Image 1 (cartoon, rainbow, N blue to C red):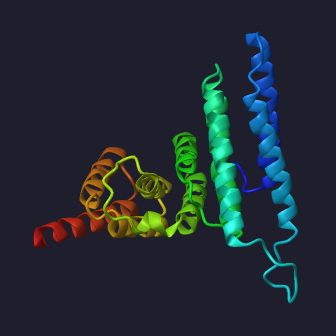
Image 2: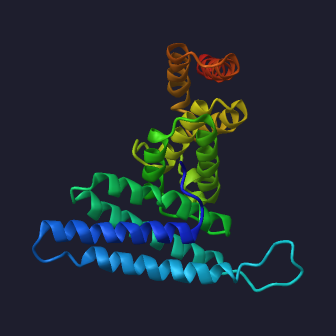
Image 3: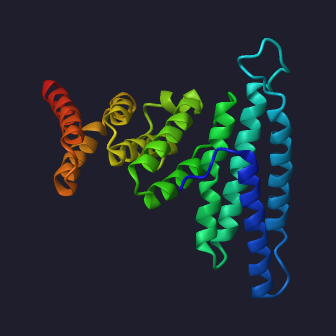
Length: 249
């Protein structure tokens, strides 16, 4: 199940993890590490602030309303929150609670979508991409995968334009690359051709050098996992398109 894009829910999940942190530290004995509590308090303060901001963001159908926070402020708050979640997840990963680290990291995705839906630009993608990957690995139902694909699309559309404009980087671990590839994989697993087409076009546009290998591997998956004909045919069309481009060049 996907976590909802809701600050109140995210805050409640973090409080639950905070209680688990305290229990684990007590079981381990010794002087407790104060850093988790510092991060938990910072997140609590941030969520309280963001809930107040919700009242300042006007209804787009209303004639009048309070002014929304500036986009730069939302970006700053978003990147700050994502950083806090990443640091808290790293601390959880150092304890005998790896499930907690993944659960905290997964919250970066709905948090980033909350920021994106209010006009905030996203400049810190890595924890969001990692959290989304954890989610994708445990989701099986096409409807859930379709929903995850939609959230990934929101992240892509809200990402700092400099990510998409950098066509020279060859770092295979750059978050923008992984985000595009993972969305295409999730779209394929959802078996929704409309989602696949959008995700595949983005691969062609932003990762042209990697597209042939991606669609070639996709065709191998089509044969191995017996995807429905409409999914197979779409993958084949893009595979042939890439093969044709390479022949012409």
